[in-house]
Image (tube, rainbow, N blue to C red; front, side):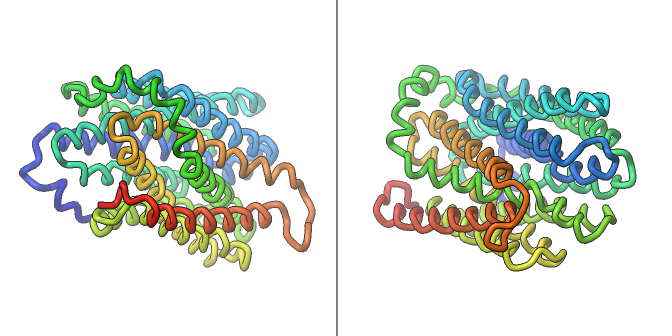
Length: 404
């Protein structure tokens, strides 16, 4: 990956530390706290330590925890770095705990994944609230996109651990990922503790609560689009490895879906940061969601391994670009106090991703019109992603306040 700005000698040590800490923090929080379960689910099913029903409950617990984290992250508005460090330690402990839970104590495992969801949401919001203002104060806002490559790197690393170690019991992999999260949290603490808090976070102490009420009213349609994004991405993000496992029992084959997903996320965010930095954020968001819609729609045509690999690339290559563009747009629309809108977007996303598995569960087994529940959810995701992209494109034309 070529990052000419980051490697420039003109950067002071503080900026370099902030960029590195943001990348590592999001890698730990999202790669382990949010998405470790996806590549490990088929291995736990193989080991017989988790049933398909319990697997759905574990996934739902993490989504609900993520929603709870989004709703409570405002507690760290005045001290985002403190919140970030607490969240990373929480991700590490809750991940280790999953590996130590007895096979029969599935409720305890679901509880640990719920806590990991809470900590992941805190980390995403606090990392954005810590890194972006710091860079803005030094007139290096253009570098902010690079911290979101951490999510893809974390997903790719988690997927690689599950892929390479796929012959091990899943319990051991949970412990290995927990140890990796501990190491990452230590690196972030080492990088950030010497740094002063960004001035913008201090100035926002009394503003965020005052502006939070109006955010949902002023940006309702934008929040719906972000919720549609959450619904659209969650179906492939949750079920891709399991869908691939239906065609082969070899973990070296079905396990490749998740590393591909993560590597596509890294490459797309890096490409966006390098070549789309001058594009309006809404246009980047709309373009990413259209590509994601192609990915979700592809599973309706065929579920063979090559198609699933392409879906992993299309969805993995756009979900972090959409996340990045949405959070950057929040800062542009609410420059004096972006934290409430960032938190509201995260809540909308969490609600959307909770709705995905709920829809599949409500539809249940069997076929309707020739489609099963997963196909219907994928069709709904495709329609929502495409429709919200059209609205974002129209919003760009009607409101030029965030055009570069």
